[in-house]
Image (tube, rainbow, N blue to C red):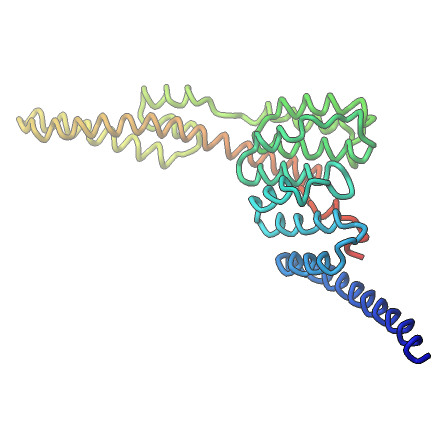
Length: 296
């Protein structure tokens, strides 16, 4: 009889101990994530999955692991995990993993690849929340390419499904803000080069790099005058040497004029992007897609 009682009671204690461990482990995983101990969170989440291989929301824990890698800046690992067999099935939503994958490629400066990954998703096949998320993520990726025309086209495609709403703003307000890129006052690269061809340094000044323009002018004018002065005084070897440097500085002046306009435009576009991102809260937060049951 005692043996029979033990065979009945001991499994109950074992089950209780197992449940107690799972509860504590889940809380520990939650605590590590909230403290931003992402790599510790990965290790403890894997430990949890090894302990209970048949956990019902395993795909969501795999998404949590991938999120920790992303927040830890390990974008190549994120790509390898999501594209690997372990992460084939996306968690919670069919697009959450795809969003993370596209942003991981973009974080590695492969913005085109990141954008292309979302091309096959259709607004018509989604609910209202997913449509907003898709448009938001597509806008973020296009902003990194400064593809404002593509953003406007994307808003037009999504507009009929979003019913003129985009978060706290209307889609018309969003389109108006994006259209403001026409008023950025971008510098013409070829005008900048042409100006510096006629007057060294003027292209740099046109692009807002006054000191660079002054230095370019002095370098070209100084060596040109030195070459002329030496030639007049029959110091021809030195004159030819200075002439060589004059040509070198003149070519560098043209290259600098081209680059100065590029840098000026890049600065204007980045500031414009920052304003759009801040106003419409276009930041990407992979943790927003984590199933609440994982971190409860």
